[in-house]
Picture (cartoon, rainbow, N blue to C red):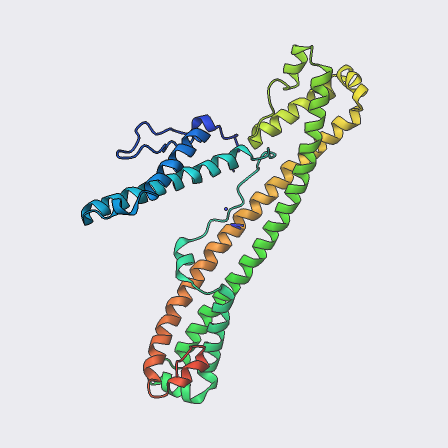
Length: 331
């Protein structure tokens, strides 16, 4: 949800910058958008000819041979980069058109938290639970830790931090589930509205293709907007314009579009706006819950780090007892 609104304007390949200067000591084409077969073949042939030269040509002074090898590596690297860019450009060209994107669903995560925790949050919760339980239930460990300042009061402090972390984790999961539910609902209504509008728009363009005034009035000139807000406003203009002039709907009835259809579409647009508002609300709550959870984990991580450090000292003569605290001990 933060598993954390983008305007999906189509990418124009013409907008990519092309290198102005070819790297010295190389005739290989490094323009990432120039993939003519002649250039690619010439580059490959040039590389193969260098690699296939008679063995005696390689029996040269060491410095010359090193320069030669460096040149070969450079050319291979340039060819690899050009081929990689070629694949990326083709991927862009082959992208299918998608409906307007309502909001980014990428969850904003704390880089610090991500790099800090190598194991999963559930594993962390379980290890800390075991440690804080066994440090009291196993008398030998309790006695050893008490001697180093971790008495009943200190352990109670750690347990309180753990309980806060557990509550923050559970709340975050709940908010994530609510956000996912609202996103599924939003996607469903978006798909319905987009499909209806696309078909209705095509019908209207056919019927009113020779009436530029109506095309302008119904926002049918040009392509449909990609940005969410403009897309919704365009749909409202279209359906409200039809509902306000029954004679236009009469003309559209030839292609199976009625006044009831216009009313139904407007009702679905209201549902779309409501669903998006609910999704944004849930997404915001989920992000706040994630921040709270990460803060709680950080506090317990610090406390447990100190706890484990002291435990290793307290049980230095009986290191196997550390396994009762969830720590791996090598034999």
